[in-house]
Image 1 (cartoon, helix red, strand yellow):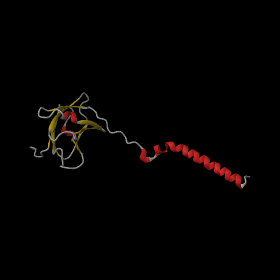
Image 2 (cartoon, helix red, strand yellow):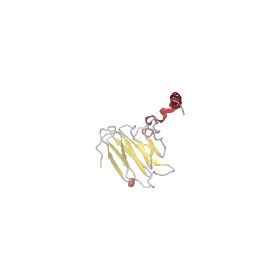
Image 3 (cartoon, helix red, strand yellow):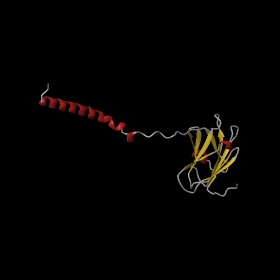
Image 4 (cartoon, one colour):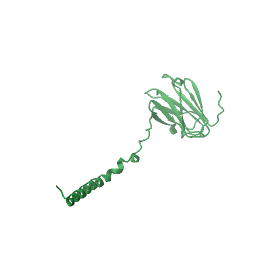
Length: 159
């Protein structure tokens, strides 16, 4: 059996060993903290549709529209375009995506008109956070040759 002094030395030795092991692991400790995780990278731009500026539009509009995949929906980001403009969308060799949606910035445009197989007009609020406008699946079909987008700051469209 160990006497009291030997037990005290053994406990101190074990505590020192545990403290040393704990401090050795501290060099990597912050990596495991829940708030230390890196945020996932944002969506990567793609080029699924051909975007051409129309004759009545400035040529920079087609370059300002970025395309991203949101699951099986192609998102066209219109937040960087001017308050007036128009572009023509055409499918590439992959064809049309299953779904299309548009991210718009309220206050920048008041109306977005989409002309494919059907004509769809979206009214955009005057203020707020960027919002997504989803195009109905019947607005275009696989053999639709092109889709025209027109946007303007005026909300008085001919309906």
